[in-house]
Image (cartoon, rainbow, N blue to C red; front, side, top):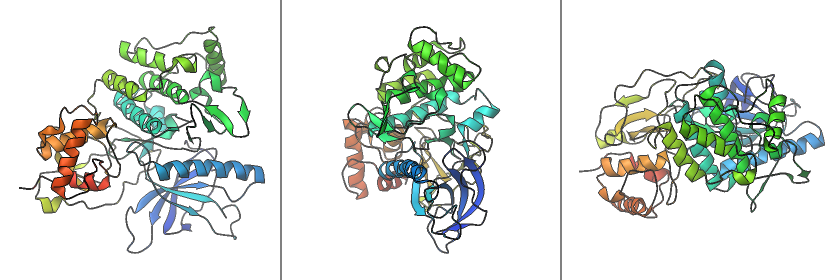
Length: 444
């Protein structure tokens, strides 16, 4: 979301549950996000969050139905999916304040707090140096969504959040929908520049617009071209003109205007994502992710610059590495995202390093940026690669196989071996409990 007149004005100091509203962070067509601070004494962390207000208690009956549908979509997805590239939701609240009719009944999502959004980055630096690595993580998020059977429906720079550690989260799932066969049903709303030609003037029934995963693939292709070149891949000085060009392109009357500065690998990725018909676009996000990783020239744990460096620490005794949750970073969503000075001893796969961030203190061998996620057999990406690095180089389990970011049978067996050693359930699934054990040093 980008800055604009606030869709839901909330005064500074307003209390909702244990949270106090602070400064506004961002606003979109349907919601406004504010900084939030926990004021309840002795409460569990995090202390600082983002509070997303959706005005689901006011407006006309028709507007109410629409806004409640948007809120329910986001809540349903965030309750069911906890993936490392999707923004985390801690709680949902409802405002009960008859004295403020403009707020009474509003839905409030308590979300993980980011330091910035990609649209603010592109406004300052149209071609960020870390663009390729950033796109790897965006593609990971898209793969995690599609693998779980969901379509995002509104992938664009404003919905890509950048965290304090340099990692990426996809956000704003108001338009998201779960697949039903080959389609999902999404609201009749879109961001034109990131909408494929077949959905610019779609047929709409009582359930909404029939959307395929290929719509997200088109949006990723546009996003990649914008991030890497600072320009859209279709001609036009306005969004309306570019939509007209997209329609002509789908009918064979317009060509893509890909930047000659793109490498051959990126040219191929963008061109394939922007195939003129949905049938010509790949929906295999695992294969797309591998191509993006190769084009980025990065490892499976692509490193991005951070707004401020992590606090890396020298290895310490096991007792000192026990996880300790600390407060989350608290800069605004529109803060400038710039490379921070290099940390003194960043981690590598072969040499995990003790660090501390909002999730706690422990060993890190990559740049996943959070501990509260789950990976299992069949998954892939930088989180799996970090898992393999920790198993092999921190815990000495050579049977993990290649450090390739693919959670195959050998990695599954190595996880079971580690879980037996640690006295955990031997289900081969790496969730928050197993991650915390993995990030402690090997005993003995």
